[in-house]
Length: 275
Image 1: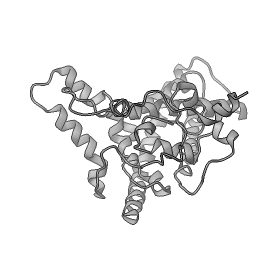
Image 2: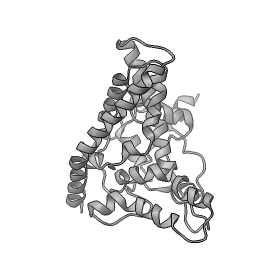
Image 3: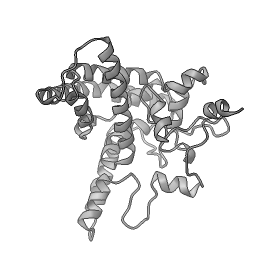
């Protein structure tokens, strides 16, 4: 039901704004506490801003990749991926615990190497703003040079898909170059149209369940009897789908079962490599 799904996305976004605003101020405060320990002090000008934005985009890639490979962070991020639709309302569908997962620590290195905390924070806001417009099916593939450098609606549709070949791909914020560089890029294939949502969908529009279901799942898993301390740790921090008895499938297991290993061939690179 697209209308209910869109309403849930908008409601989640509106209600999360105060929480995210407060969390952003907390993050800025923590970064300000780090500032006296900077190795260097870089000036605030257009050139340092550009470098900061590029490095912050790399920071987002790392943070985003962890969000898909660590269940503790996935419990927050899964809210965004729980929709079976793909539109601008999905961009608003965000977890409320983002700044309490510890991922704010990914910003600390940028401050330590000399960037102003306010600049670092602002770059993050710009990155998030850019990503908002990626959540659409109305834009097809853009010119090849754009698709080669920037994250686009096509690339992000892949990221939101639950098809086996599209899992764990295209973590980019603004620049898709990080996925190309680190081997996580997968091109959208018209023969394998993205199927949005989770590998096991929630099938509910209950706001509380959407926001909390993974945390509840973690609590149930950790409280099982007879587990070792390490197994309890893995239920919190291992990739989603990990289980002590192998009864569940992670994204890696799903791809392996589908006979998928390395990402698919990038058509841009393939065309440019032809004689």
